[in-house]
Image (cartoon, rainbow, N blue to C red):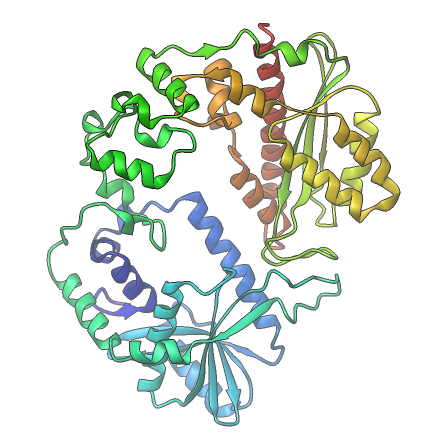
Length: 491
C-alpha cells in the first residue's frame, strides 16, 4: 500500500495521535514495539484462529501481501459461495483498505464481526467497526448487523476441542450509526496529516491510550533528564492519584520537596531516604526468621492464564495454571540445594506440578514465598482440583512464610523508587544477581516464552532455548529470596 493509502490501523493510529501516523509512514525506522505489545499481537492471532474455527466452512482470504489479489479473492468468494463465512474479507473504497475478521452470511445480508482478545468492548473497538462498516457499505454490500466479538471469561473449556461460547458477540449498530457520518472527515484529516510536515504534539496521555505508542522513545528524547525530578511523586507508596495531581498543581514535582503533612508514615520514610540517599534496614528485620527451623524452602511459581484455554476445566484469562516452580532448599545454615518443576509438553501440568511439590517440600520446615496470596492461591486451587492431594497441599500452605511484608516493613533503598517487588529490591542488596542478563527477565516474558513453546510452529531449537531461559529465570527468583532472607538476618 502506498504512503497515501489508508488502512483501518493507520486511521486508528491517527486518532490516537496525528504525530504517530506521520512517523509510522515517514519514519518507520523509529518504531520500537515493546515486548508487551508483541505479546498482545500474538494473543490476538490465537483468538482470531479460534474465531475462525467456530465456522468450519469458512473461506480464508490469504492474499495479505497482495491487495489486488485479496480484493479479487473476496469478490470471487462472495459470488461463488454466498452461504459460506469469509475470513479476512478485504474491501477498499477511495484508497481506504479494511480486512474483516468474520463476514457471516444471513438471509438479509451479512453480519460483520470484528474479533478482539479483550474481555469487553473498548472505545477504540467502536471506531474500528465504524471504519470497516463504512467501507463495506460504500461497496454496496448489505450489513444487517455490526458486531464485536470478545472473550467471555465465564466460558469453561471441557477439554474436547469445542470452543463454542468462548466469544461474546456484542451488537454495535446503534452506537456506530452516528459515527458513520464522521468517517469521511477522519480519512480527510488523516490524509492531510500525511501530506504535511511532522505534527507538533507534546507527549501526554495519548502516548498510552489506547495503545502504547511505538514512537514514545523518539518523542520524549528531547526531555532532558536534568529537568526531571530524581524521585517523582510516583515513588510515594500507595499515594492516591488525586493527591499526586493536587501536589503537582501546587508545584511539587519531587518527593524531596513535598511537605510532610501530605505524607503518611511510610511515605515520610521514603522521603527521608530519598533525601539522604542512604538505605535503611531495621535491626528487627530478621527477628521473625531467627527461630525458624531447617530445612528451609524458597518457592516460586510461574503460571499462565491463556486467552484460549487448552486444558480441561480452565477459563480464558481467569485460570492461572502453574507450569513451573523453582525451590531452593536450605538444608542447614547456608547449605543450599535446588529442585525445579517445568512441564513444556503441552499437557495439563497441574497434577504433576502438585505431586512433585509435595514430594520435594516434605512435611516440615518453613516455605518462604514473596507475596503469599499468589503462591497460596495456586496451591489452594490445586487442592480443590485434586481432592486426594488436598491434605498435603493445605499442609504446605500452613507452612508458608511471606518475605514481602517483612521487606516492606523493614527495608528501603532509594533506588527501589517506591517498589518492594523482588526485582526492585534485589539489585540493591545483591547486585551480582541480575535479571537483565537473562534471556527471560520477568514474569511477562516467562508467560510469552511458554506460549511460544506450546505453539506448533516453534522449532525444536527455539523451544530448547526458551526452556533453558525459563529454568534460569525461575531459579534466580528463588535464589533472590534466599539472599533476601540472609540479608534480613545480617548475614
